[in-house]
Image (tube, rainbow, N blue to C red; front, side, top):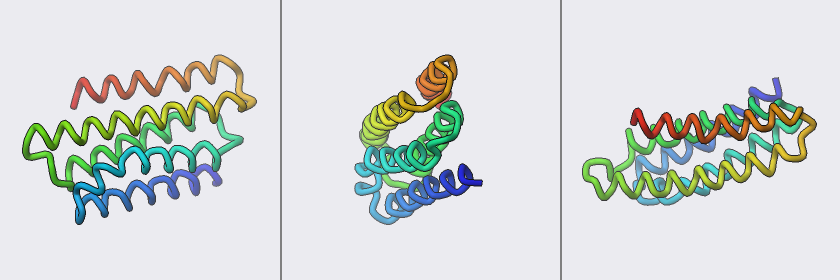
Amino acid sequence: MRELIVLLSAILVVLLNGYIGHHYPTSGIMGTPIILGISSLIIVLGARKSASVLKSCFIIFCALFNDYLLRKYSGGIHDSEGASWISMYFFYGLIASYLILIFGTVTSKDKKINKIIAWSIFPLVVFLYWLIR
C-alpha cells in the first residue's frame, strides 16, 4: 500500500508539471530536470524498504510519463528546435533521476544482483525508448 501512495505522489508531481507545461510551455520544459529529481526523491525516500527493481521501474515510468506529457501538451514540438530543447532537458532530468536511483539503492538491503539489475534496467529502457520515439 505504501508503494502505491508513493507512486501516486510522484505521478501527481509529474501531472503538475504537465499542467504547467500546458499553460506555460517554457516553464514546463525547463522544469523537467527539477520535476524528475523531485519525483525520483519521492520514490527513493518514500519506498525505502521496497525492492530496488521496483524503485527503478517507478522512476522510469514517471520519467517517460513526464516526457509524454511534455511532447503531447507543451509547446515546442512543432519545430526541431523545440523538440531539441525538450530532449535536452529530458536528458538532464534522466541524469538526475539515475544518480538519485544509484545513491538511493546503494544503502538498501537488497542483494547485490538486484541492485545491479535495477541500475541496468534504467539505461536499457531509456535507450529503447529513444530508439522507438
